[in-house]
Image: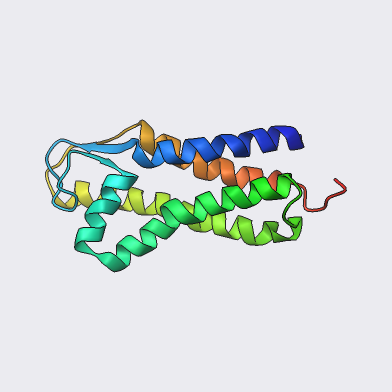
Length: 148
Protein backbone atom coordinates (compact mmCIF):
# COMPACT_ATOMS: atom_id res chain seq x y z
CA UNK A 1 0.00 0.00 0.00
CA UNK A 2 2.80 2.42 0.86
CA UNK A 3 4.46 1.78 -2.51
CA UNK A 4 1.22 2.63 -4.31
CA UNK A 5 0.84 5.81 -2.27
CA UNK A 6 4.46 6.73 -3.00
CA UNK A 7 3.96 6.17 -6.75
CA UNK A 8 0.71 8.20 -6.77
CA UNK A 9 2.39 11.03 -4.89
CA UNK A 10 5.34 11.09 -7.31
CA UNK A 11 2.83 11.21 -10.18
CA UNK A 12 1.35 14.34 -8.62
CA UNK A 13 4.75 16.04 -8.87
CA UNK A 14 4.33 15.79 -12.64
CA UNK A 15 0.55 16.22 -12.88
CA UNK A 16 0.33 19.46 -10.87
CA UNK A 17 2.42 21.50 -13.35
CA UNK A 18 0.40 20.05 -16.24
CA UNK A 19 -2.81 21.06 -14.43
CA UNK A 20 -1.54 24.62 -13.91
CA UNK A 21 -1.11 25.16 -17.66
CA UNK A 22 -4.10 23.08 -18.81
CA UNK A 23 -7.23 24.94 -19.90
CA UNK A 24 -9.72 25.14 -17.03
CA UNK A 25 -12.59 26.72 -18.86
CA UNK A 26 -13.56 28.29 -22.16
CA UNK A 27 -15.78 31.34 -22.54
CA UNK A 28 -17.95 31.97 -25.58
CA UNK A 29 -17.29 35.68 -25.21
CA UNK A 30 -14.22 37.35 -23.78
CA UNK A 31 -14.48 37.57 -20.00
CA UNK A 32 -13.82 41.06 -18.65
CA UNK A 33 -12.04 39.54 -15.64
CA UNK A 34 -9.39 37.73 -17.66
CA UNK A 35 -9.50 39.09 -21.20
CA UNK A 36 -9.05 35.54 -22.58
CA UNK A 37 -11.26 32.91 -24.14
CA UNK A 38 -9.41 29.97 -22.57
CA UNK A 39 -8.29 30.24 -18.99
CA UNK A 40 -5.72 28.14 -17.15
CA UNK A 41 -4.46 28.52 -13.62
CA UNK A 42 -1.34 30.27 -14.92
CA UNK A 43 -3.13 32.60 -17.36
CA UNK A 44 -5.67 33.47 -14.68
CA UNK A 45 -2.87 34.25 -12.25
CA UNK A 46 -1.14 36.44 -14.83
CA UNK A 47 -4.31 38.46 -15.21
CA UNK A 48 -4.79 38.68 -11.45
CA UNK A 49 -1.23 39.95 -10.93
CA UNK A 50 -2.04 42.83 -13.30
CA UNK A 51 -5.38 43.70 -11.66
CA UNK A 52 -5.39 42.60 -8.00
CA UNK A 53 -2.04 41.79 -6.42
CA UNK A 54 -3.48 40.78 -3.03
CA UNK A 55 -5.89 38.25 -4.53
CA UNK A 56 -3.17 37.05 -6.91
CA UNK A 57 -0.88 36.37 -3.97
CA UNK A 58 -3.56 34.35 -2.15
CA UNK A 59 -4.50 32.35 -5.26
CA UNK A 60 -0.83 31.73 -6.14
CA UNK A 61 -0.23 30.35 -2.66
CA UNK A 62 -3.38 28.18 -2.75
CA UNK A 63 -3.06 26.96 -6.34
CA UNK A 64 0.67 26.45 -6.73
CA UNK A 65 2.86 26.67 -3.66
CA UNK A 66 0.72 24.97 -0.99
CA UNK A 67 -0.23 21.86 -3.00
CA UNK A 68 3.23 21.38 -4.48
CA UNK A 69 5.07 21.86 -1.18
CA UNK A 70 2.61 19.46 0.46
CA UNK A 71 3.30 16.88 -2.26
CA UNK A 72 7.06 17.25 -1.77
CA UNK A 73 6.66 16.92 2.01
CA UNK A 74 4.60 13.72 1.59
CA UNK A 75 7.33 12.36 -0.71
CA UNK A 76 9.89 13.12 2.00
CA UNK A 77 7.73 11.29 4.56
CA UNK A 78 7.50 8.28 2.23
CA UNK A 79 11.29 8.37 1.86
CA UNK A 80 11.61 8.57 5.68
CA UNK A 81 13.36 11.94 5.44
CA UNK A 82 10.59 13.84 7.23
CA UNK A 83 8.62 12.93 10.33
CA UNK A 84 5.14 11.46 9.80
CA UNK A 85 4.04 13.61 12.73
CA UNK A 86 3.66 16.45 10.20
CA UNK A 87 0.82 14.64 8.39
CA UNK A 88 -2.02 16.44 10.24
CA UNK A 89 -0.52 19.80 9.25
CA UNK A 90 -0.07 18.61 5.65
CA UNK A 91 -3.67 17.39 5.50
CA UNK A 92 -4.81 20.80 6.70
CA UNK A 93 -2.69 22.47 4.00
CA UNK A 94 -4.33 20.22 1.42
CA UNK A 95 -7.70 21.57 2.46
CA UNK A 96 -6.42 25.07 1.74
CA UNK A 97 -5.56 23.95 -1.78
CA UNK A 98 -9.14 22.75 -2.18
CA UNK A 99 -10.19 26.36 -1.53
CA UNK A 100 -8.62 27.22 -4.87
CA UNK A 101 -10.91 24.78 -6.67
CA UNK A 102 -13.77 26.57 -4.92
CA UNK A 103 -12.49 29.93 -6.20
CA UNK A 104 -12.46 28.65 -9.79
CA UNK A 105 -16.02 27.40 -9.39
CA UNK A 106 -17.00 30.77 -7.93
CA UNK A 107 -15.47 32.59 -10.93
CA UNK A 108 -17.54 30.40 -13.26
CA UNK A 109 -20.76 31.15 -11.38
CA UNK A 110 -20.04 34.90 -11.28
CA UNK A 111 -19.20 35.03 -14.97
CA UNK A 112 -22.35 33.11 -15.93
CA UNK A 113 -24.55 35.32 -13.75
CA UNK A 114 -23.11 38.70 -14.70
CA UNK A 115 -22.70 38.44 -18.47
CA UNK A 116 -24.33 36.70 -21.41
CA UNK A 117 -21.39 34.37 -21.63
CA UNK A 118 -21.32 30.71 -22.52
CA UNK A 119 -18.78 29.00 -20.28
CA UNK A 120 -17.76 25.38 -20.52
CA UNK A 121 -15.40 23.59 -18.20
CA UNK A 122 -12.44 21.87 -19.79
CA UNK A 123 -10.23 18.94 -18.88
CA UNK A 124 -7.78 21.07 -16.92
CA UNK A 125 -10.38 21.81 -14.26
CA UNK A 126 -10.97 18.08 -13.82
CA UNK A 127 -7.23 17.40 -13.73
CA UNK A 128 -6.55 20.14 -11.17
CA UNK A 129 -9.47 19.04 -8.99
CA UNK A 130 -8.33 15.42 -9.26
CA UNK A 131 -4.80 16.34 -8.22
CA UNK A 132 -6.03 18.18 -5.14
CA UNK A 133 -8.40 15.35 -4.17
CA UNK A 134 -5.73 12.69 -4.81
CA UNK A 135 -3.33 14.61 -2.60
CA UNK A 136 -5.91 14.69 0.20
CA UNK A 137 -6.46 10.92 -0.11
CA UNK A 138 -2.71 10.18 -0.23
CA UNK A 139 -2.04 12.22 2.91
CA UNK A 140 -5.00 10.61 4.70
CA UNK A 141 -3.81 7.08 3.83
CA UNK A 142 -0.12 7.65 4.52
CA UNK A 143 0.82 5.86 7.74
CA UNK A 144 1.28 8.21 10.66
CA UNK A 145 3.92 6.07 12.31
CA UNK A 146 7.05 4.59 10.81
CA UNK A 147 6.14 1.11 12.02
CA UNK A 148 2.96 0.79 9.90
